[in-house]
Picture 1 (cartoon, rainbow, N blue to C red):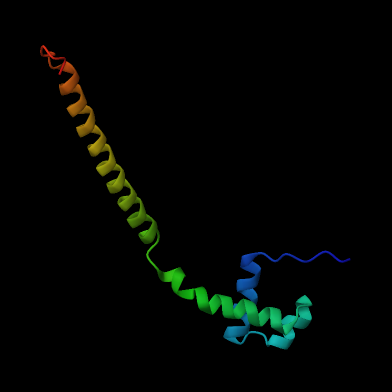
Picture 2: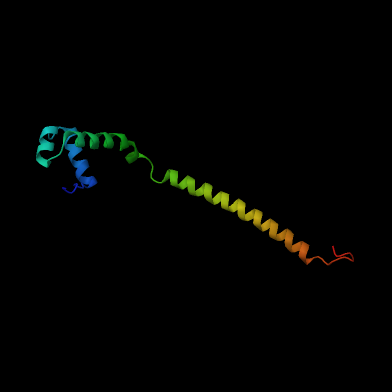
Length: 100
């Protein structure tokens, strides 16, 4: 059974751009690289679909997620600190006659 070929992203992009810019036809690209037209069409659709990601501000969504996680953590630690302060005042107070 023949092994599947693996193509690098740069190679895929170059072939799709060659087709889109009219440097080569789909038939020429497929013949030269022994690809089926469906494969090239799939690569083209993927490039067009993901093109907006190229121009998006990098890390914007990740940054907001990190900030939200840190705010949640600060809130949790603040609640823990308040509980420890309350427990330390209770434990440090002198006991009365009835043990309370």
